Length: 118
Image 1 (cartoon, rainbow, N blue to C red):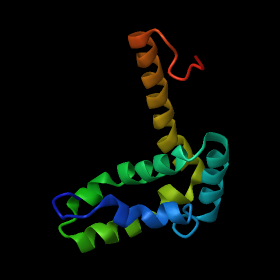
Image 2 (spheres, one colour; image 1 turned 90 degrees about the horizontal axis):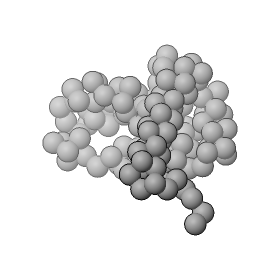
Image 3 (cartoon, rainbow, N blue to C red; image 1 turned 135 degrees about the vertical axis):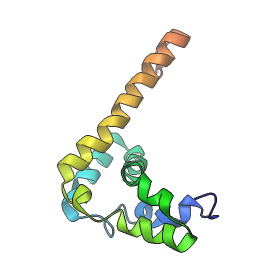
């Protein structure tokens, strides 16, 4: 995206503004919203990263800004997004593991829990 001078906000802003309602299947959006109410706004970024990571090869093959934008339109469609259970498990479980590892590392390095109240 950098080589084509495309800012990521240009291609994903609609995702965040409409909370994915206009770009993903309704069942998937409802699962995302469940997680949004439970976990907070970080879920919106996790969904975006999941979509981008799952379609990384196609995005990297784009040769122009137009192709990058078209690729971002297409990655919100397809079997991966229609099966909301697989989408949420595959994509978001990875970020759960990353959070756990980061919290554990923080605890080891500092001796304090990452979100302590003191």
